[in-house]
Amino acid sequence: MPRGPRRPRFVYNIDGTSRRKCRCRLGAKTWLAHWGRKTRLALPLKCCAKFCRRRTEVGAHVRLEGGDGRVPLIVPFCKYHNKRASSFPIEIKLETVLCQASMNECDK
Image 1 (cartoon, helix red, strand yellow):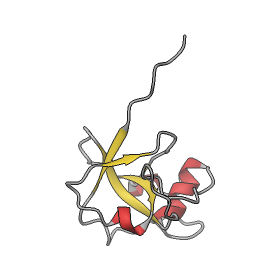
Image 2 (cartoon, rainbow, N blue to C red):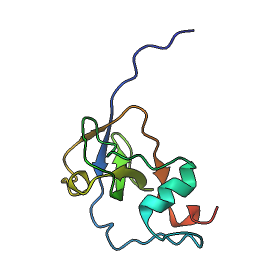
Image 3 (tube, one colour):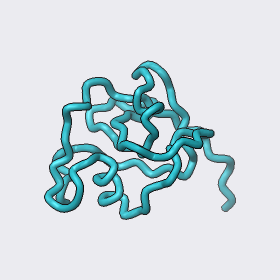
Image 4 (cartoon, rainbow, N blue to C red):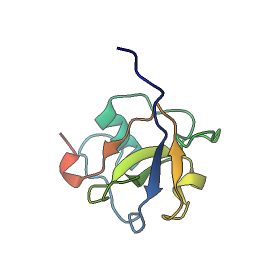
């Protein structure tokens, strides 16, 4: 059965996460590397914010619109979108895959 058009997805940055560190034993200890390990996808060259053409630089801690944010999600962003206020909705590209930033998810 054909699917209708996909609805846009919005995320919000989560404040106070800059001190959180990835604890994966293997590879680089960055959230961007964590995203790559968990999704098993190649890092996107461009930021996952819709219409952004800047290069991917960081793994940003976000919550999905409507989500409670108890377990932050990681999305590959440029530094500009990573610095957006937590009250500012950011539409992400439809093909964007998010992963959990839970410390329990490291090394699994």
